Image 1 (cartoon, rainbow, N blue to C red):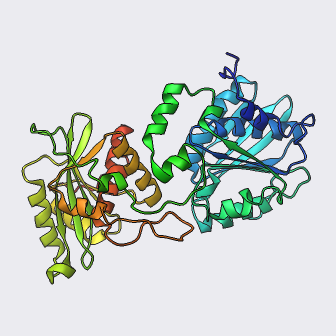
Image 2 (image 1 turned 180 degrees about the vertical axis):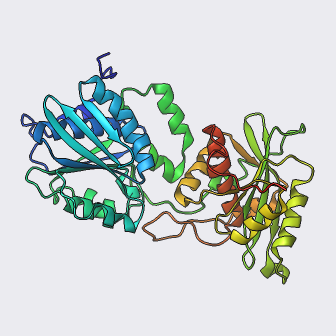
Image 3 (image 1 turned 90 degrees about the horizontal axis):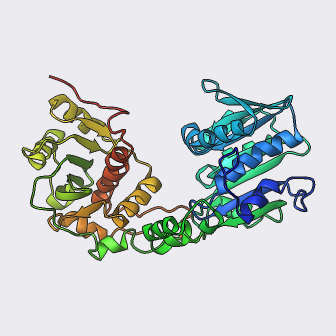
Length: 423
């Protein structure tokens, strides 16, 4: 093992590390696009190559490192990269309050600004800068306006663009405008698979392959830009994850809630049994079907009835349900957590939780089981969006997995916020 901590690079990774060098036959490209499977070793070699190229070509210049958010950028790129650079002799000084890193080597110094491309408004953050290069981590998660504004900032001679991402919908703007037009835009396009990451063992690759099925297998394992279609959770619709909870008492309990007045109200009680969570029972009310709307207080009564005498750790609620959140807080009995509502993230986490045997649905949860058989993808859209129908139990399940289950796995549950009022 060398000082950087790497034992070896694959042929494709070496291509990423050297394409810009004057001795390479590829150095005339204006940019590089690396897409493909998850865990295929794109990000590490790209970020290292980006900094090496910057010092090979420039001094006293500005560059940009971009992620969906600055938090995710630090986690996925900056934190793994800086120790490697330090081991190679670079001096790295990060100014977290100002979101930049000054990096020096052998008398040269360059500044790397950190940007989050979360939404359309993010383009204004980078407007007006002059950059000699920009690196986009998970570019398919960023809005087109932000990416194009960042690219427009790269006006100096010799500036280059660096993109990496996992595949999304084949109608996605980045696939249409950059990957399909890579030759036209003078960009080198490299497609990665898990085998291109020498740090992954055959056992680990096999485990990742078992996590996905259908369109998600084609995307995350085969690295294809394919559309999702049909049922969102086909295995759940087939009853593969329908299972009665064990007879003994669970270790922990939570309730997840998708709030509705005109639309249905859905609440699910979750219990931890061993290493798996079970949706043990539920409450589902449709005012349209019943012909009568319920008040927040009436829904709170149903919440208490659902919880019974169980020590519920928290109620995870649709973040837009401000009045019901306040109602629960006012009673002072339950903690309230506003659910994470990133739909794409949540859907992926639910798929993974099912495949890993982390969640099951009790046969008693008839509303959830009914919706599994009806919950479908929107057809012909450039985004992977489920149809906004038959989705209320689906939403509260997504809230549970992406909020409670994810935070418990990270040992950070309740670290971010607790809205409980004490009497």
